[in-house]
Length: 251
Image 1 (tube, rainbow, N blue to C red):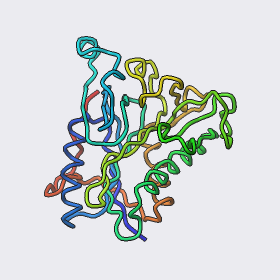
Image 2 (cartoon, rainbow, N blue to C red; image 1 turned 90 degrees about the vertical axis):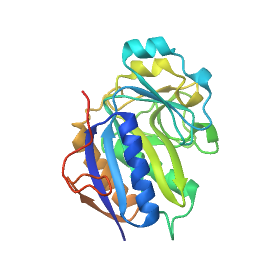
Image 3 (tube, rainbow, N blue to C red; image 1 turned 90 degrees about the horizontal axis):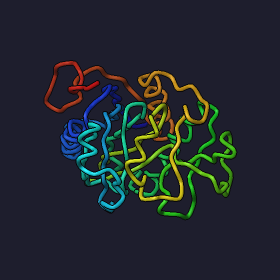
Image 4 (tube, rainbow, N blue to C red; image 1 turned 180 degrees about the vertical axis):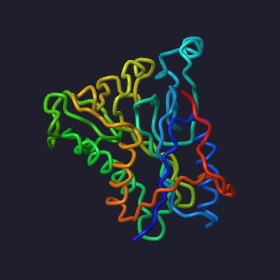
């Protein structure tokens, strides 16, 4: 059984979280830290993955500045996504060596974590098989308590996945919509898919708990899916730092 140290960071700007991930990945590759799970929220930010089309960002620079929305081009997989308060973001920094060196399996495992998290609130979620454009976790809007095989025509994404691996150490992760203001997604074509929208626990009639409580539920599912023991730490999660606290937060 692997050991994963989990940290609830609160609300953290995307650039700060990205820098922290990069430091942790380098330290994990070097073997100076163990597996780590960062759980947090972001202030409003649009991010583009390696394969993203800028045409899928509908809000121009001026509009983003007026609305206080950050913008980042990243090294993760996937297209365009949007993060905002009310969305749980998980960044696992895990070594998949020696027994889990399979990118597709890793993506499936992240999806399974979100499927189980949705089920905690009686929301049936699932993946869309055999469609590489529909990576992530989806809900059937006509049957929100179940997700069929195949699902119905009216599906919406509740959880996005975008990852990057360096020497089999993971970076980036997933974002799960709990009580997110879905209006923010109108600034983008989410994941480059215009035919289906996005949803959240709240939009489906569920009552999500405070975000830290949701983070702890998610971490428990990470432990189950990855056959890991989860240990919570209040210590500063940056290599070389011993003081307690969290990253600079906003909001």
